[in-house]
Length: 410
Image 1 (tube, rainbow, N blue to C red):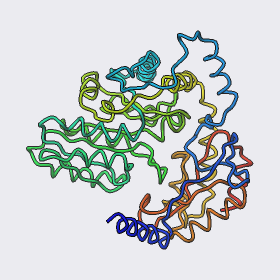
Image 2 (cartoon, rainbow, N blue to C red):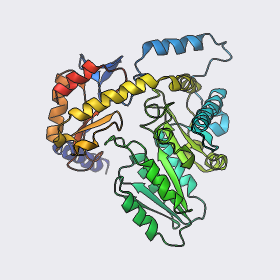
Image 3 (tube, rainbow, N blue to C red):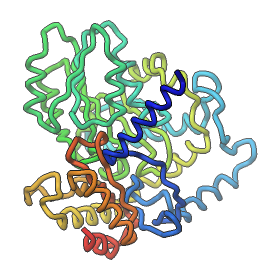
């Protein structure tokens, strides 16, 4: 039987290769703004290191110097060795949650808003989205989850794990709020709770959700709660880098605000900002939290170090916006998500260059790599069929000259 399964797997892999959808782990070395691939230095325009902090050796040296000045009894450990509910909780982790909470409340106060949220740190964005919805829907409450068609795979998996006799989910057309409104209007009167789930910046199209419109929809139905994943907006948008909700002054209207540290923060981990009672429920019901070893305290110390700098990085965010807008405006309409010229304004550092078929996308990626850019093809099933693309990603360490050289290759 084992040989039969192995043969079937081999056949399935051959089928992926024939469709040009076969994936392989790249063999890379990192050197500041570059990656070394097969001995060649390529400018990295494929990562989610939006602020360019991941390759900042001076920043790393500053952090390590501070750690080195600590006594041996206060040096953060290299492993948590167990879950938070056992012995994995740590002063670094608790301090991080407190500082994240202060970050949120500082942004709220600057906008003259009134709200109070607690923060729960988690191991990754995938862990967050995999565990939050199932935990929230364990109560015997008839619930309808309505998610944007293009939400991340982790959210989709979280919704699937939320399935029960009392929980159903539907996916509305991407950023189509009339379609969403119809789902809400058609919701049975016995539905007690409606959770709208969206990303703030969508990872493959790089466009934004209309949070103000979602807040308006929420105001019309007391059953609605908003779940917003800011993974690709944290550090990038907002006066202090808190994300699109900060930029659009909708922080106080979002019930579950999720963010990650593995992108613009150049760290690892995630968080949810929510009501204190919800936080306590997640601690008691969220399986990825309960059954996973906590992240190493040294990682939380690094995240705290970056968090302290985040409000001071406005110039980097402005430069990032300028680069991204310049690149977006230079792309031929045939290769953009939207054909309308009036739609070209700053959305995010993610600028998709759409080719359509896999062969053309692979060829374009190779051309860009030959020209010195580490650009990668994104193919189905990561994106819908016939929308294969190069996901061009700007970061704040790139120069205007870098951007112009890239444009010349498109």
